[in-house]
Image (cartoon, rainbow, N blue to C red; front, side):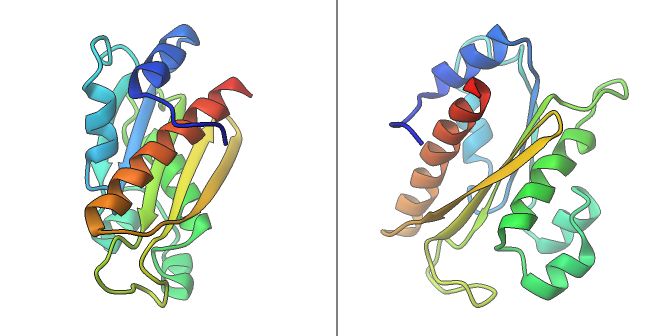
Length: 163
């Protein structure tokens, strides 16, 4: 991963590649999609976002495997990948899934979740048939962890778009 990416760089990269993006968020609670739509012109590439804070929404709306959620919990790299893949279809427009899906899941605190310590975060990215994740170990306050996740997600997305 390179240095921090700005939301404007991400929006411009999406527009430049004529790609539409859908966002699925858990621990960031809408902050990632809010960061993207803060940029003028974001209505071109941003389809929308799903805040899947409740684990059941990850399954019912985003299509994350119930078995995976039962076995590993919501804070897991494969869950992040399935969220990123699922949001592309969940927010399809006229039957066409979004080109890019990005998802955040993790523990912002103050308490551990699913046996994972505070600061454990996964960002899932799905572009065409390429699905990957970034694992983060963050520290600080709940707000610090959420903001660091948004920053890292933007950077990871920009890196993935450059591949």
